[in-house]
Image (cartoon, rainbow, N blue to C red):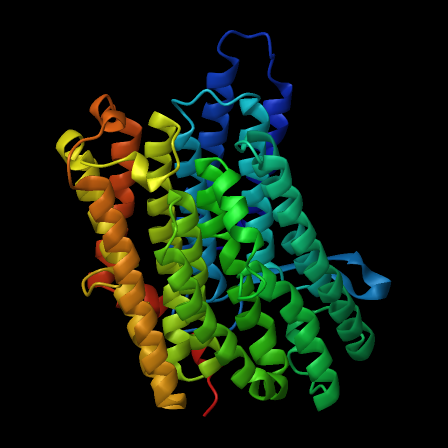
Length: 487
């Protein structure tokens, strides 16, 4: 173990990057390039620090590691209290991996006010790392809610035609859930007399209080993940967001609800979880099947992938609330897997839309004849999305099916129908885009640039690598997840 406050450094460097960008001379002819370079180097430093975290992480220990504690309001028991376990670390690694990729994706694009876009990326990284490592309830809540502010501006400023409507819809849904969660946080604080997570986890809340606390946290987590029927903000946000915004939203921000269920709902409100589990199963199965059917009839590229994310998150909640070893391990694996696969899919459709400014599927056909390398990459991403064995998508969904089978056979059977439907709409999408005659829009389409080849190669590697060697990821969170299992 290392003695330096590495979690604080992970929070400090993005802030330093933001500060340096503000100090730059905007009249410099290389201003935009310097902004991107500062953003990239800052996020690469954080990636390096997160790898140090990984290297020094004790896989034989299930308790929190790299703990840092500084009093903020000592009289009220509010502390700057950080630490990570096997549940936190994979999400921090996913965040520090994808944020620099998003900045690289911006390199050849001419976004207006690029300085504020890069600042938004840095702030999102800061807030996400903060919430994944916070062990004080109030500090967690601040980071949790703050992480959506930069995304609001990314959608509202750099989005497409209806960006303002999508940004406000995104904000209002988030705000409603947040207010109820704040009431739950305050209830826990006044009942237990502390906001310290490790102390709160030892409190045995009465059943009726657990019901209220579960619902208050559920109001926020269900919107964030998002569960049906709280998902309606997501398609609009994805369609209007720029490519990099869609990537961060799908790959990381949608995982905050699942992380919240694992970190708070299961360990703190176990009786309420058991009480509400049948209701969550109903919502999860509805999301998996009904939303998959909606995805099947989509004509918009980004909407199809957005709806597929809702369906795949249905698998996550199904696995989490099964509360057995297969379901919980599968849900955790599925969140990281979906983070990589959804990022790859949104980068891919973004590459098409940026070339032709057309979001509809019927605007493209015969792309393979003009872009065979792109077709090969996209095929790998589709195979991961439909959970083909040998890809990372298979591991999580297979474990979740086993976990749900242990609860009720029909849950596993219905979830299996969702997998078939996902194969149907993704293979249909691939066939429409890449096969058939070349239409007029595709004839003049440009090939992949070096930035895109690098991004797609990295994402393809991890989709296959963790599909073949899943144990390398499972070992990170195994002991921490096992503590949540109901025997």
